[in-house]
Image (cartoon, rainbow, N blue to C red):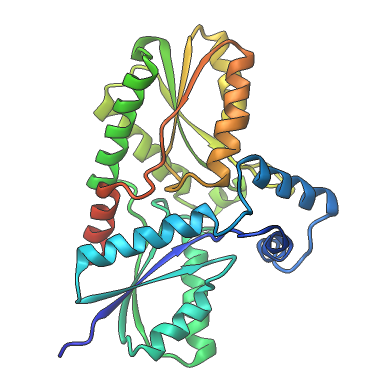
Length: 302
């Protein structure tokens, strides 16, 4: 009987309860504890979106994505899920894979756009775990999949449904495609993150025949130095001055309706639009969309 190949899906991680937030936030900050003010602010944001009362949305949905992918791929593959900043830790999952006798595996980050600060960091954690544990699993890494046809088709259909449900016309609506901002310094070293985000946005705009669209960023961190922009809330203000009636936001960088989507877009961006008397609608995240699962399957098989 042929041994199954491993598939390691990786995501950012998210705390499940309030006491998890401090160690989680500290891990994001590479071992430096946040100030009480920053910690309290993050905890409050989680409560505002109804989190910290059980398994996180990110963990729950990522587990379901892994389950559906496993069903789609069949017995030739065994699916694992590891998190960068919280449990289940990537290093622990590597150990589990080794114990299961996995010899070959595909590593796939649940984020379509490559960056040295995101996807490459996950890959680094895999390689470090292999080295630290003396484990010999031959990994193949998927670097990015921002133009994968099923991924684009799923977003296209969600955008079309959102136009219908919101009753917005394309002519009077500006569409923002958004993703997590990163420090601008990454561009100095030739990082392709912003370029690939634009490529996804442009591909979707062509499919949807959008007359008015742009790329914007969200979830900027609190480190020194400029971050990639424009910030979506600032960009919304500019569109009011340009005469638009409505704002439609499609987050292309996140796959799950978790904190960064529910707070940064459903609360902050929506409030910004409403204060300007602009209509606002946020396209649902992909979550467990069947075409997303098909996209992941295609990436594994290729």
